[in-house]
Image (cartoon, rainbow, N blue to C red; front, side, top):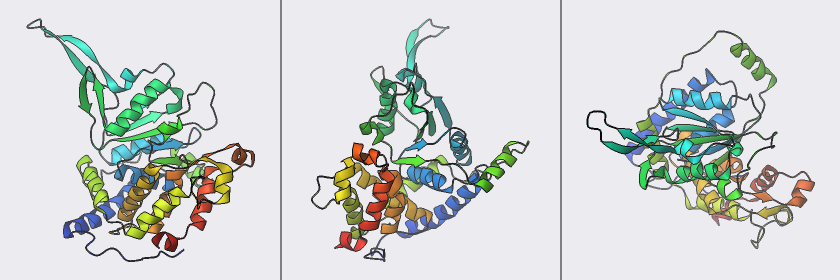
Length: 346
C-alpha cells in the first residue's frame, strides 16, 4: 500500500547528519559484505541483529542447534572490533556468575585487606546468552535488569556496562525439558524476537563446503565501538513524519482485543496484545532501517519491515488460536495487510 506522505519533513537533518548518513551507509554495506565471508545466507537475521544494535536494543534468537547463531555473533564482534563474551546458561548458574562478585584481596607489601569487585562476563560490548531458558528465573532477571539499565549493582555500588552494549540471547524451540521459559514481561525487554531458519539447499551445500576444509577467511574491521555509539545517537536524531508515528501506534493498538476497532480475529485469537514498548521499538527499528538504506527519515515501509520481529513475542495467543494452528506471525501479517497507512495518517 502506498504511504499517505512520501516526502521527508522539512529541515529533517543537519549537514553533519547527512555526512554521517552517507558514511554509515557505506560502512553498513561493507559490514554486511564482511559477514558474508563467514556467514552463509541468513541475510534477514543479520539485518535484524544490526537494526537492534543500532537502536540500542537486544535480540532473542530462536532456532534449532547448528544454524550458526554463535558464529554470527562472534563474527559480528570481530568485524566491529568489539569485546565479545559468551555465557552458557545452565540450571546452576547464579547471578554473580554473570554480573561479577567482590573478593577479598590482600596487599602483600602492607598487609592491607580490601574487597575488590571482579567483573563478570556481562562486562563486554556483545554478550551471547546461550540457551537463556536453561537457567532459573533469578539469573534471568539479573541479566534482563542489566539489559534495561546498562549497569549492575554489587556490594552497594553501581558499575556501568561497556558501551555499546548488546545482548543476543538464544533459545532452542524443540527441547523444553528442564527449561525455565521466559515470562512475557521479561520477553518484552527484547527489542526483536529473531527467527533463525534452516538454510536453502544451495546455502547448505556452501556451509558444508566451507566447514569441511581448512579455509579460515579473514575479516576486516569496519566500525569501532565509538562509531557504533555515534550511529546509535544518529538513529535517535532521525526524524519521523507524524503519519508514521500514527501508523505504528495504530498497528500496535489493533493487536489489543479490548480496543473498539480491533478486528474480530484479534478478539477471537489474542489473549494479550502488544504494549507501548512495541510502538517505541517499531519507530526505533524504522529509523535504524532508514540509515541502512541511506535515507534521512523513517517511513511506513520501514515500520512494516520490522513489525514481525517486534510484535511476534508481544502478541500472546489464546487456546483458540493454538487449536487452529494460528501463530502470532499470522496475526501480525494479517494486520499489516489490513491497516492502511492513509488511515493512520488521517
